[in-house]
Amino acid sequence: TKEVKRKPKIKILYVATVKPLGARRYYVESSAEFLSSLDKIYSKLKRYNNIFEITLRIRDIKNEINEEIINNALANKNDLIKIGKGISIYEEINKCDCLISYSSTTLEEALFMNKPVMCFGLPRYNHLSFYENSFSKNFNKNETELKIIENCLKKKFIYNKVKKRIINYNF
Image (cartoon, rainbow, N blue to C red; front, side, top):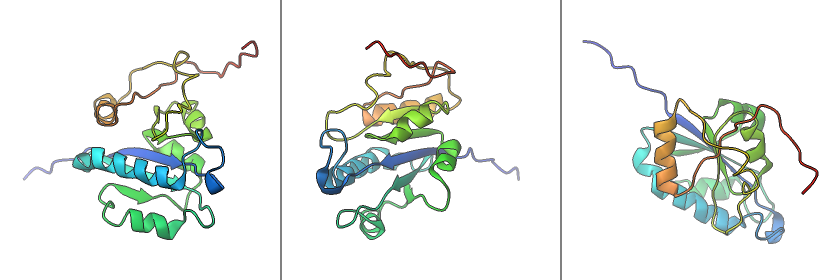
């Protein structure tokens, strides 16, 4: 019999930033908003767990969110989502196929590492609004799978189209 070679799963890196006591409201999700966003992403993508795997990276915030809380939240979601640990965030970005976050500098870091990025979360803030006109869709080897994510989450990925970051001081 001939063995069927499975295509590797698309690696989604989901980076969450939560500030203590809801600091920087409207720019950073609260713990509750983050957990709701996590549930929403899971519910939209769970039927594609044979195509995708999500690695979650989040810092502990004393009295708000920690590994125990995350493990409880992920108790029935480990078919799709796992907690990333053991390697640096740079290595995590480097090995992912795309990055999703509500508001994190990792969105920009991934963009300049030529990774498709998506701003996703409950409040209306869009961390990437400044980049939407500067960056556009380029061909991506995982275009079909990334389109599934876009359709499920009702958001678009942003792709890097420039090789060097240009800073405009005249804004």
